[in-house]
Amino acid sequence: MQKRLVFELKNIKKEYHNRTVLQIKHLQCHPGTIYGIIGPIGAGKTTLLKILSGRIKPSKGELRFEGEELKTNWWGKIKPFDNVWYGSIEDLDGNKTVSDLLSHANRDSRKNNDSYFSAKNQNNLISEKIKNLSQGEKAWLLKCMLHNQDPRVVIIDDFGVYLNLKRKMEFQKMIQRMNKDLGTTVIIGSHDDRNMKNFAAVLIYFDNGHISKIRPGLSNKKSNRK
Image 1: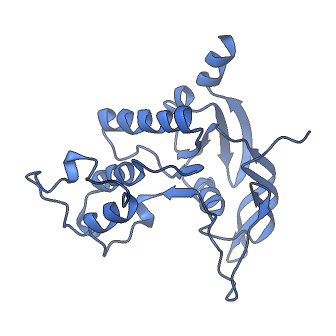
Image 2 (image 1 turned 30 degrees about the horizontal axis):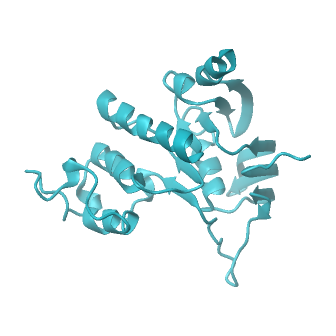
Image 3 (image 1 turned 90 degrees about the horizontal axis):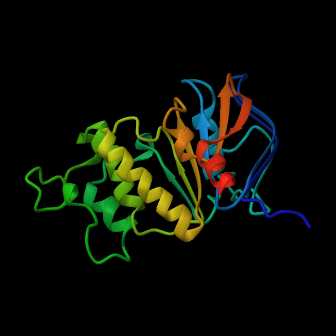
């Protein structure tokens, strides 16, 4: 019996201006697993995450989400996958306000979920435009947007880069709860593996657009010893 896959990539290639920035022969992502996508700037991490989230289309190859191929509309634009949540501070609409994004993200929640972006906070950032926030504030806003949601897959680029240790660990614990309680598949991009080793079950290392190695995370090794 064939195992169910969240994502499957075959012979994927992404090119910009005749330059290949990503090339993957075969990659599978299994449900309920936390993956760390590790590599330096320019390694191909962001390109991969955008392809998985349906933000961009590969130049060549086959991408399947839960067995379904990537679809496009009449104008050739990608139809984003349902139940895939993508978080990147670079992807936030700078002209929208904090309230706009939190209201849309948490429309089923009766109240704002974080005191930092509360109207009662002395900074009063709830009406501030995203383009006026610091990088750290944008990174924390992603956490607030994800709170109370239940996507099948969570994809986050540059996780925790702009957060202090306390907020980074709080964000991490929330994601781990989603993974444990809801079975959420999590795919996170990071420049290094120091924290990801204890966080992710599978570490996928990238270099120059290629997968250089795949290793189990320490969390996976600990669970295997139980």
